[in-house]
Image 1 (cartoon, rainbow, N blue to C red):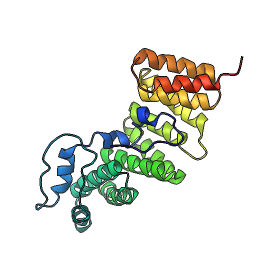
Image 2 (image 1 turned 45 degrees about the horizontal axis):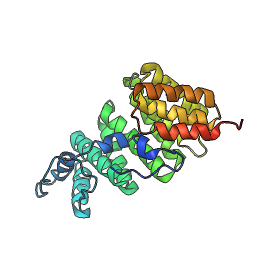
Image 3 (image 1 turned 90 degrees about the vertical axis):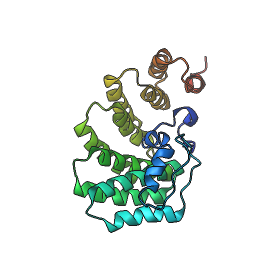
Length: 243
């Protein structure tokens, strides 16, 4: 997927792997085929290589959504179609499709309340709507589902970091809360690159330059080739008080 640049995140090209985009970025043509297979007449895709430019027609999407709507008590269909529509909608940055995915996944969750993947995908779908639409309410809903996911897998660093990002992306951002969550992630995995990138930014935006610099050095130590290092270093240099 080619995510939009985050206007409040200076390094989106390097650190755009946030929230639901992790799933969307992993989407390949095989997964698109899974969506098309909801109708027997849909054609197989030609390759198994990732391609964010792959497209489904409105008719194909409607066929898949209709199948879910026509089988509202079939948990497997609700789950499979909902997840597939989410992944495609996230890849295409299509809020309308994300909302359809949420509607279907809500049914899946009612049928199987303990389905971890459904809970997490609902969190990601609300996160992506909040990101695309700059909608605080959607980010709050994402937190609710991420909290449910963490109650089952409390050591999931990616989900914990995404909780922090829901605060980071709010308007206005709640930087203190985001840093709290990022610290929790780093307590689980001190080498988690995405968390190191965002905690550096969050602290820098609070003018905590010394502490931000410490995390930047940790990131440099973990992966000297991380593409965000140069931009983060420039950000911190620009915020240094004049000598």
